[in-house]
Image (cartoon, rainbow, N blue to C red; front, side, top):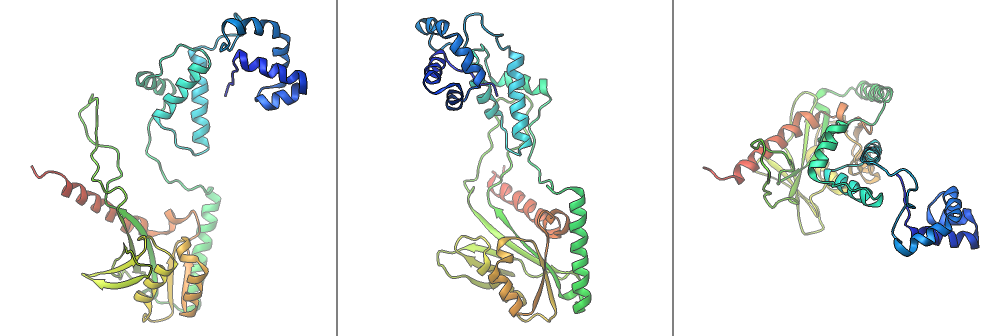
Length: 332
């Protein structure tokens, strides 16, 4: 990004360079060594300009004034850089960047919402919903997927595990307030408010498990409890597990495994992802002591190898979202 300096700042750099050298001044003021040298050559002109306009950033007639096209290019490059790095870029951020840059470069440009719309059109930009794409290369996805399948086949063959003793399990957070920021509205509406239900921070964690032959375990709901102890019970056709903050942790995971699988026939194979609460040393020791075999889905492969994400949780969250919206809207 182009960096500019006021006349006052340039003269400060010149004075510093006289005492400590051009390289030291360039390092301290964040300018190039050639810029420092040029300012020293222009010291007389800069001091004359300092009397009339200390905040000026160019000598009169010096340099080519940046146009709105140059301004566009700089902002566009900044957007692309941030997106390549994976950072979120919003419309308000772009307006702020554009306003600051126009002021810094002495360009008379009104960076309004209308300007932003035209900027989007000029550079073919759109507002998109974030996606969860794998960061692995195609070769890595194939390699990890094949290794996982080979490990699964090896365990099943070695221990002669029946389908009724192979379980996939996972948990997900379910928030009571909708997180979507899109709605149907009449074209041309100036204001599109979306009401919140006031439950942005209210959530539960749901745990689900099913065997390879299609037998589902009762859903487990993690509820927040003020006490430090973890407790678990069955109620109304569900398993209720209380934790301090309703998030899954190693103690809660062990309590769930005990409750669901303590008396399950062995050999028993559990397949789950690499969440910290699943693979801690405490959990590993417990599973080993209870003769429970495990297979961990490799990192970055959940979207390919975790059926719970699509088969269970997607439909559950969609249903919950519809129910909470319907129950919060007026009946007429």
